[in-house]
Amino acid sequence: MKKNLLISFIIISLSSFSQQTIKIKINQPGIEKCLGTNAVISEIPKSIKIYPNPAKNKLNIEIADYPFDQSLEIMLVNLVGQRVIHQKDVVLRNAMTYSLDIEKLPAGIYNILIIGNKLIYSEKITVLKN
Picture 1 (cartoon, helix red, strand yellow):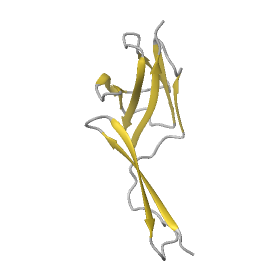
Picture 2 (cartoon, one colour; picture 1 turned 90 degrees about the vertical axis):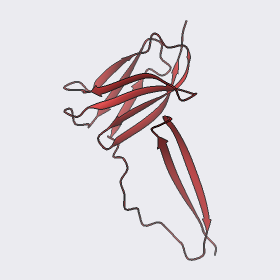
Picture 3 (cartoon, rainbow, N blue to C red; picture 1 turned 120 degrees about the horizontal axis):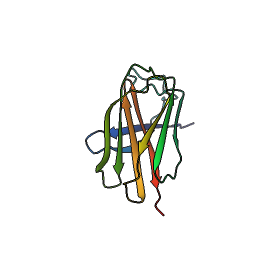
Picture 4 (cartoon, rainbow, N blue to C red; picture 1 turned 45 degrees about the vertical axis):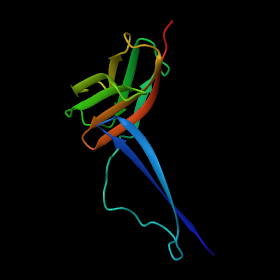
């Protein structure tokens, strides 16, 4: 019986702040399963919540199980790949929630990118205006 092996890669480009998924299908007799990889790219905390989505004025970023003494970098990127918000050295301290002011942004779809120690997280965000 012939089996197909499907390998998926998620590639995040920090130069254009975009994310792509590449899928490779391999038709090779004898390959039954992947036993693992030898590299860990990202260890995502158990819970990352970004709300409200869609948002109008403020965007709340809640990260559980992330070391409070380590800083994060938070970026909002439009669909053309332009950085519209870039905040470096964000430290959550005792609070697990960070509030991002998006009041001046035009309505549209954006990607939020959160980068930290062993953490790269991206999510699509919609900004609404009255």
